[in-house]
Image 1 (tube, rainbow, N blue to C red):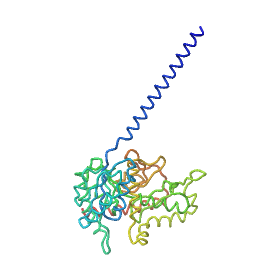
Image 2: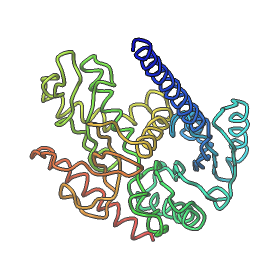
Image 3: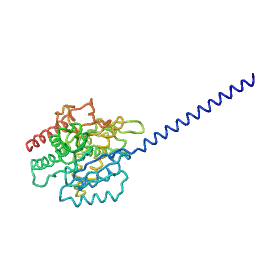
Image 4: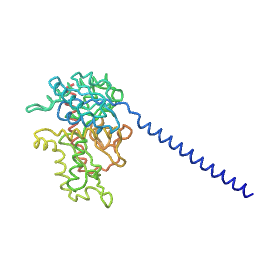
Length: 370
């Protein structure tokens, strides 16, 4: 009986050992399989940058090639477009991209041909535009940009990928985005946006400096409206992560006069201040903001965090539908959604309506140029 009992026990132990070995083997196979999946290289994403030989373009293209826009594991092909007088400079930018040996960069096209530039692009970053020069009327500038964006929009309509996402940076960015949509009707409204992330980041920076906290601890500022001096930087819903938990910005700053005046004008006029200091426009921060905009749009915003994007108004917060207006948005799976249900006080309402009115006037001016 004792021998029989030992035999059963030995068999039980042996079965457990075999089970452990089988589980270990299966676990190892799963790990190998997952590792192989990670090693499978993603298909390259083709990114168009117009005005690529200019200041913003020169700062932007290496950021894209390094993975700041689409992540550290996403290969990219860069299409760079500029005007004929900038062709030699554009060729120089291409040479530098090759010389930098970016591991994620799978190809570079440098061209003045808008059709070649737009072919099969998945993401279009529209940096090029006609800047307002001394003595020019607003309608003259708008007329020039209507011509530029009509041509480029038509090329995107015909030659870009069906799911192409568009970010307009060239000013007037909101209205240039509207013009682009007019001549690229097959591109979904939700795929055409403009850059107000630069203003959003400027607002974060000002609060960070004021409170002497890390900028990464400041969240949920909002830029409402136009990318212009009428924009409304709003901190009413913004928070700061502290050692005692999340605190509202207004509570920590404890200076409503500063928040309702100097803070707003500083953000609104930051671009001009940088031009005055550098004698050049804010290229580095604009390029970084463009990367942030696309990164969050494609890869998603962190839970509990929103960002500012110029998007098609659906009537939210009483803003006229059909305008490209900056709202607070969250992003998930390549889609943005306007944050709903935020309380709007009387001060904010006035500011939001003022910048909306400017966009209505710009839209009418653009329509008169079509």
